[in-house]
Amino acid sequence: MVMHIIVLIFEILYYSMFMKFTKKEGKFWKYLLLFTLITIILFIFNTNNLYVYLIFILLALYGLKYIVNVKISLYDMFVIFTMLILKLIIETPIYFILYKYVNIYINGIITGLIKFLILFLLKDKLNIVYTNLKKKWDNNNFYIRYIFSIFMFLYCIFSCLFIIFYYL
Image 1 (cartoon, rainbow, N blue to C red):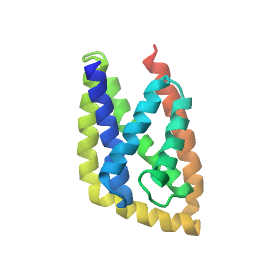
Image 2: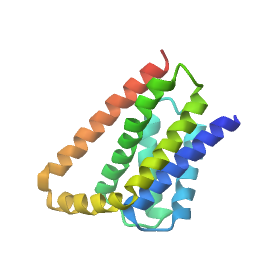
Image 3: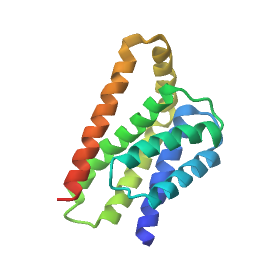
C-alpha cells in the first residue's frame, strides 16, 4: 500500500508540474491540490478501465477552471491529452523493458523519476510550444484540431493496448 501511494504521488507531481510548466499560470500548490483531489476521486473508482481517463480529463478541465482559477478552452483538453500521451510514450517502453525484472511499484517509481527528468529538460520549452500551438489553434492553422482528434484516437488505442497487455 505504501508503494502504491508513492507511485500516486509521482503521478500527482507529474501532472502538476506538466500543467504548471505548460500554462505558466496559477500557483503550483493549486495544481497539486487539483491533481491530488482527482487522484483520490479516481482511486475510489476502479482505475483499470477507460472510463476513468474520461473522468480524469473532465475533472482536470473543471479543476483548472474552479480550483486553479485559470481560463480554459477546448485547447486545454488538447494539452491534457498531450500530457497523457507523453506519459504513455515514456511509461510504455519502460514497462515493457522492466516488467519481468522488477515489480509494478518499483517500475512506477522508475518511470516517475524518468518523467521528472524529461519534464525538467522540457521545462522552458513546454510554455513556448503551448503558446505557439494556441495561436495555431485559434487561427486553425496546420489543422491543429485534426491533430487533436488524432491524439484522442492514439491515446485510446495505446491505453487499450496497455491495459490488455497489463492483464495478460
